[in-house]
View 1 (cartoon, one colour):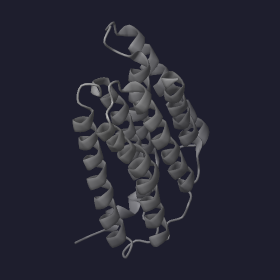
View 2 (cartoon, one colour; view 1 turned 180 degrees about the vertical axis):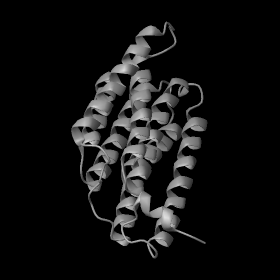
View 3 (cartoon, rainbow, N blue to C red; view 1 turned 45 degrees about the vertical axis):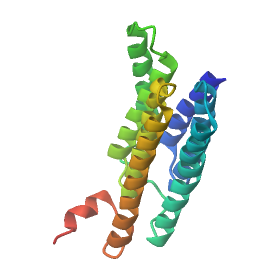
View 4 (tube, rainbow, N blue to C red; view 1 turned 90 degrees about the vertical axis):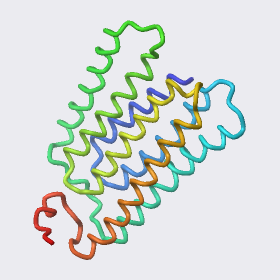
Length: 209
């Protein structure tokens, strides 16, 4: 069952690579949040009530509800157009993300380690590199932030490797990191929105003191 959830997470990366609308990205983030909760719940052994509450807070409440809702508010607050505006055609992006997944599968097959769960390794690295690709291949600042959140989801999957040893420490660290990043994003966008309408990465070059 865990492998099915992880494969579904990898499939969302392919869908995200061809999505044209920003709100589609937000829906994918919501879906990924629920997938991460299910994966974590099935992966962690000897999970107590406190850890379960913390995992639900990070995955469902924070990743699947709070962050997408906050990003939606920022998009509407700053009247950002809903098109993602990628630099490359969707077909090329699909090929790139597919190659990322294939390369991570090839890399994992070359690693011989009994303690390494290759499914987690492949999905985690694929999510990390797909997030990086979204950052460099999209024009809008908001889509680059979404790419950063995808990277955070990849880090979360990697954290499950040590989740049984110290789940609270790992999850709390990741959650605080995301919270600080998104909070800074909100302040940044609410201020820059008064200067640039529908902020684009290229327009940042025009900003001066």
